View 1 (cartoon, one colour):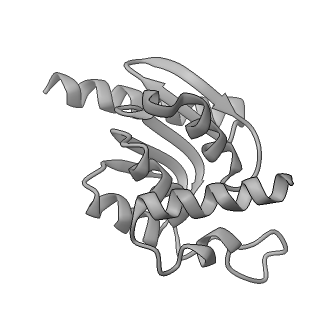
View 2 (cartoon, rainbow, N blue to C red):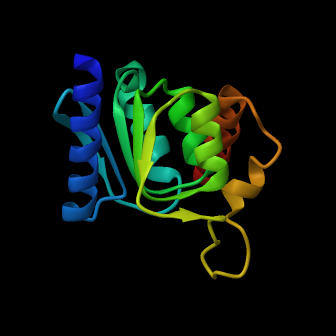
Length: 148
C-alpha cells in the first residue's frame, strides 16, 4: 500500500514538474526529481535512459507527449509508472499490457509529424514492433546514425 502512495505522489510531482517547468521529460523516484530534459520528440527520453541506465528502474516518468515509442522505452527501462499530458491509444495499450500504471490528461489517436500532415516517424518506425528491447535498439541506432 505504501508503494502505491509513493507512486501516486511521484505521478503528481511528475505532472506538476512538466506543467511548471515546460520540460519535455522528467524522471521522479520517491519524491525526488532525478532529471529533467528539454527537447523535441523521443530524443530527450532516449538521452535520459542512456544517462541514468539501471537507475530508471522503479521510477515515474513524466513525458509531455507519450506515443508508442516513448511507452516502449518506458517498458524497456522497467519504470514503475508514467504520466503524460497527452498519450496515444497505442501508448496506453502498451503500458496496460506491460502492467505499468499511467495517467494522462488527454488521449489522442496518434502523434503528428513536425509539419502536422502525417504520423510521427518514430511511431511509424515501431508500428509492427512489439518487443521493448527491439524498439530501444531501433531508436538508439537511428540517433547514433544521425550523429555520424
